[in-house]
Amino acid sequence: MAALPAGTGSPGKLSRQQSGAAYEQRARRWLESKGLRFIAANMRTRGGEIDLIMAEGAVTVFVEVRYRHSAAFGGAAASVTRHKQQKVLQAARVWLASHNGSFDTVDCRFDVIAFTGSHVEWLKNAFA
Image 1 (cartoon, rainbow, N blue to C red):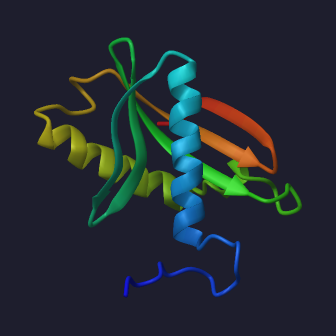
Image 2: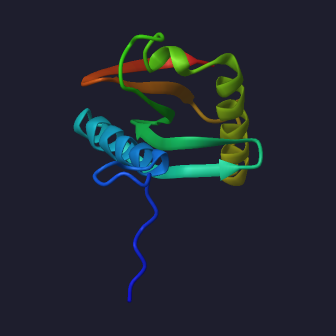
């Protein structure tokens, strides 16, 4: 008999990991509809993680995807703390190095796609 996928224990609810993957996929489709080209997803290093890596023309775009059910505690965009930014920067540095690049040689930026309830916010060049 096939094993059932792990979930939250509540029928019809997604686990945190499943929900995150769904919003990352939604963000990817949304960005592609805006003209960006997909490069990679869920790039993990020991120091951090990048949800999406996209390209807008010659610019490499590192994207952090956040979701919050409501804005009661500041919304999704507010959840990208300085600590989280540092982790994304470190992971981007590692990714660029593995592709023979660096912040000095590759034109790049850091965007945030913030889903708060049903509202989508695209913060271009959210941090550097």
